[in-house]
Image (cartoon, rainbow, N blue to C red):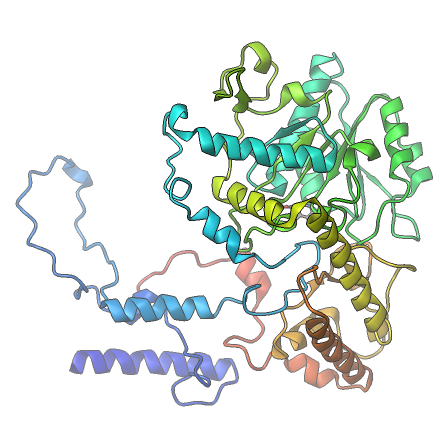
Amino acid sequence: MVEALALNQGRQTKAEASAKAAGMDTVSGNSGLQIEEALIFEQCSGERSGVDLPQAPEIQNHLGTLERTETLGLPGLSEPQVVRHYTRLSQKNYAIDTGFYPLGSCTMKHNPRLNEKMARLQGLGDLHPLQPVETVQGALELIDCLADWLKKLTGMPAVAMTPAAGAHGELCGMMAIRAALKHQGQGDRRRVLVPESAHGTNPATAAACGFTIDTIPVDSRGRVDVSGFKTKLGGDVAAIMVTNPNTCGLFESEIVDVADALHKIGGYFYCDGANYNAIAGRVRPADLGVDAMHINLHKTFSTPHGGGGPGGGPVVLAESLAPYAPTPWIVCDTEGRFKLLEHLEGATKHSIGRLRSFHGQMGVFIRSLAYMLSHGADGIRQASEDAVLNANYLLARLQEELTAPFDGPCMHEALFDDRFLKDSGVTTLDFAKALIDEGFHPMTMYFPLVVHGAMLMEPTESESKAALDQFCDVVIALAQKAKRGEADYFAQCPQHTPRRRLDETQAARKPKLRWQKEL
Ligand SMILES: *Cc1c(COP(=O)(O)O)cnc(C)c1O
């Protein structure tokens, strides 16, 4: 008891110190019902345990000098302590289930609960990836059915289902392009064209595949500068990587011209399909001349994401790239039985091989297919239209006080720059921090790089007009506050969070990844 009290006091002093640092003036360091949460290792003593374990039997040591000499150092807590710790941590997480999440280029849309129910169905929830194929025919059929929807929606003849996320899909597509070029004796084509507005994963992927990156400019309309692009064409060009709608939230209106010119010189068109939510059911990428495109299932088809996964990044492929798709391939024989082609022989002899273990992200596949089937083709089309409508509503309302870099309507996300903050002493970062105090997750900041102090907002189709108005009211009021010269207020934000502004450079350069006992 005395020991527990002492521990508690020790913790409070530490909490108090960090609370002071965070500008909180309560004795405990807690704020309202938000509790200062110490690390689990700091909440306990290693000698205690929440469970009664029997005395370990005498065992003969076969580890020689590798035997552990110190205690393991695991935290010892009771069940209620553990439950509270993890529940509190989960409450510190801002999520699409707790509030509006206007993070541009991320498509944070509602995750229907029906999807979750389907993923937990017996026979799906308890599948094991090593089960014999005869026992998982339904699961393979489900993947095949999802593949079929993706092919129909995009108009493409083939799809590689295994990539685990968008960036992984890019890797898949660029490896297929590299393999196709090599097979045609064109392996010395090394140059990949990437617009300067591209997501960082595009040039990173091309570089990882051994290509060199040649940047193409964006014009004053926020789109690929077509004449600039044409001057870059030559016999050493392997591919172009274009996002459409692009990262400025705009449709690349001259994309068919771009694709034609590229195909004429023997290059491939890789489309980054992360923004497919704006056009699904309305535009078929095949009709735009796309040769390969990943689809972020976790964005467009509503599966949960954030915090690094899990996601799904199937890649639809043109006829010319289909032979290079990664294994395993799911095929259906004449009797309607599904099997997996896993070896590089016969139909799969040109495949780039495996990109990951097993057959793909099954839980994400189930949720995506549930989303598609529950919406139907007309519902998917309406979701795209409503996403675009909502973004244009934000653009129209916020243009009263904010400044938009490009004229005309947008697709699924509205982009602003920081001209409206000129001479106010307030930066895009300050503005985002002030939004946190107002209870809103900030928009995407400083991306795309082609726009100064960018603020990229994506409302998605699942937000109501009331939710959008609440957000707009706050953003407009903050913009007016900034223009009134209240820079000091913004410099103090956020004031109501458990932590204020972090030294993000230090956190990135010298992350503390392991807890170490203070001696
Ligand atoms: C999200 C995104 C990616 C990367 O996708 P992940 O699934 O996060 O790997 C690539 N490009 C664009 C434009 C994106 O928005």
